[in-house]
Amino acid sequence: MVAKADEIGSPIEVSSISWHRAAGGTPTASFNNFNIYMGYCPQEMLGTSFMDNYIQDSRTLVHHSGSITVAEGTDEWFTIELDTPFSYDGEGSLILEVAWSSGSGSVHNYFFDAPGSPMRLKSAEPEAATGILSSSRCQFMLNGTQALENGTWASVKILLGAE
Image 1 (cartoon, rainbow, N blue to C red):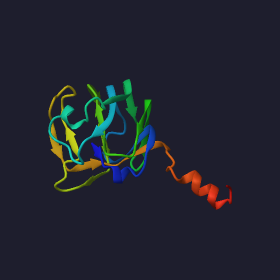
Image 2: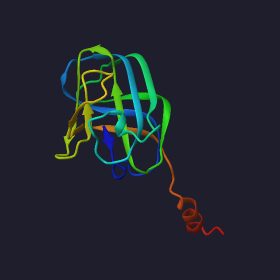
Image 3: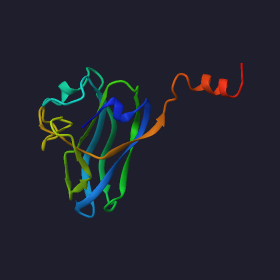
Image 4: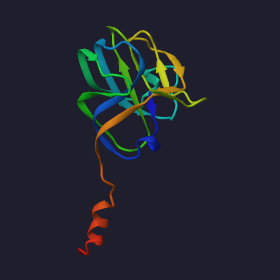
């Protein structure tokens, strides 16, 4: 999936990612050899080649689990803590790639659609080089510490009358 800079808003040190679970699927689902990658995308839409969507050398493995289980109910958020926080600098589009080798059960998440804008690339094979484009994207949240804008402390000093 791709998130545009204006959707993210500002620089952030991402420490976890949450998804909003929707009705459907099974009460619990397990995913084996579960990986999350993050990186920068040179455009606001995706192409059909997974690796060509990344700016060179920006793809970073931020989470690996031998197995994860999702058991949150409908309308609940489930969160995955990253092994390696990702520093998003507030510039450009961000790719969030989720891959697993096998599993049981299924998870349905809330989605929204951006007709004509390929925002998600999917494949049934974790090692596939290409995938099928979709204009729908699941609802997710980047959690972490947002960076302060450059002028923040100067503005505070002026507000408080400091020299």
